[in-house]
Length: 263
Image (tube, rainbow, N blue to C red):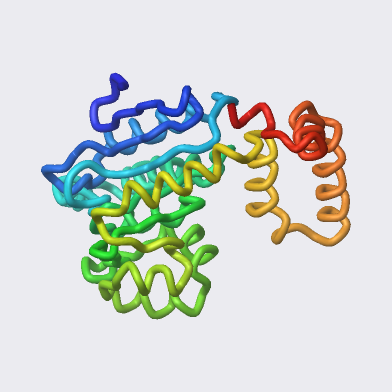
């Protein structure tokens, strides 16, 4: 467990998996300054742990995250534009920290994800959602926009889906979230943990350093020019081939045994 105010961090599988849980169930894990700070601090601390094969992100209680806290939004009414800018930049830094996290982040979507909560879903690499979960980019209903989360959401679901979901703010199902690419696995709530465990087992069988390289490829290679991609991808595979884990993986395959990182 951790000493954060609104977040807990637990380790399992001999320290190879971390679980970050938002703990404001009384307000559906809505964001306030402390939760934003705790989440950013937790992921920043975990980012230096090279033992990790993955991190699970979830919410305590019936909801994943309802987005912005109503009390915080009421206070923001009286902020100057400069104060609102500073406030939202803190939130932007949180999404960037999770999006750029070096190893895979599994979103365990146990319930409703609204507004900024959908932003958290968008920055997860693998999203496992309960069938009963509901989603919405609901900001437009409050006279605002999903601006801070939009870079991550548009990259995840594409412009065509963002154009309709941003302007309508309509709620949609976990099945629809999977259809548009926001979620990857949808399962009955009672089977959610088993589905997450299946994903974890896949990650535990993969080389931790190779997974980091694979995530970096997925994030970056589609956004660079041909010459940069050519050099970057060649250097990536060359480095991995001569790495300790690359050598171990090849030897394990040839010797018909499991590689050392699975033990």
